Image 1 (cartoon, helix red, strand yellow):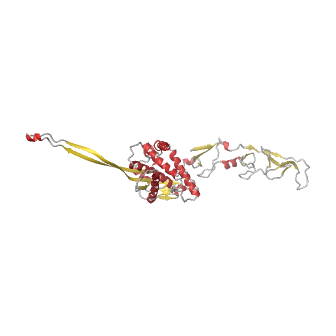
Image 2: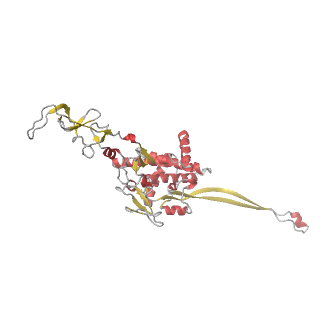
Image 3: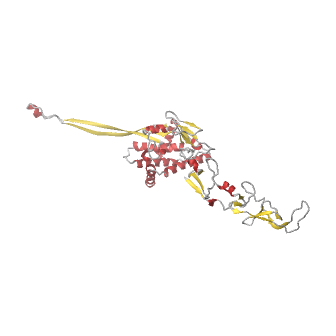
Length: 412
């Protein structure tokens, strides 16, 4: 998002009025003598009186300084021409340029100050939730964003790169920009909790299964959860890179594969030809044959749940909760529903899982963390919740909001 701050953030540049104090008393002609004080004016800078022959500065509020004592709070040099005053800290004065360096936002990417243009406007890009502000040029110069939380990369805290491998486990690197399709950028905060192994996935599945059980939703204990990379997910979708139902590519973080096994009983009935034809020695019409099919049973099975490897733990768990909802719908033989309704229900369970992570006694991922780390994880948790709630896509976003309103009204 591009934002701007107007010139109202900076006070008007006020003129510096310089005067000379003329001595009222006699001047001493001897060497080393000083002119006599000719006024009750006292310099606010040094605390000494303004003497005859000295130049001084009078401010708008009648405060006076020796010309050499009227110093910029930013660079400590004398102010001439015009000045700016800090309304929040009376007594602090600045060169107009030094004031702008003080109050203008700093780019979180390159560390440079973003100064006003000729119109007095400061334009910059921002990530609204995280409060990052950065130069608009960084939206076009290849500056990377964390694929999980969307924070931009700063030069002081470079993102790590999770390299994709079409076969085998991924690996995390610490330097360099990933080539297209070869890796994902992760900010340093998100990289601390990435889920990489199938064993971790199995442990997290047990946590998600317990969450479902608390809400009266039963999941089998042995659902096959597989951690794969993006290449494998796209191959499983037949090369499609976007989420199902017209969702954005970021939705392709998990897939659920189900099979329906149907048992059919075939019954064939053959009627015998009438005995009258055999008595008179002629062949009658062939015996009629009746075949009947009867569906004995239908059984849905979940063959695999595939979840993207290398996601931060909170995001991984919410995606797994989403996919487990697909599995629950199929295993419970729900009637066919539109894609929007089913995806909306899945997003609802992902949202509720994230909300439940903040509750006491939930055995959540933030247990045992130091306060600062737990606070950062909680900010990430709320970010993922907001991302679900504010999703603009028709299938996932509108579907979730429909499901959420139904949940508020009727419960599960």
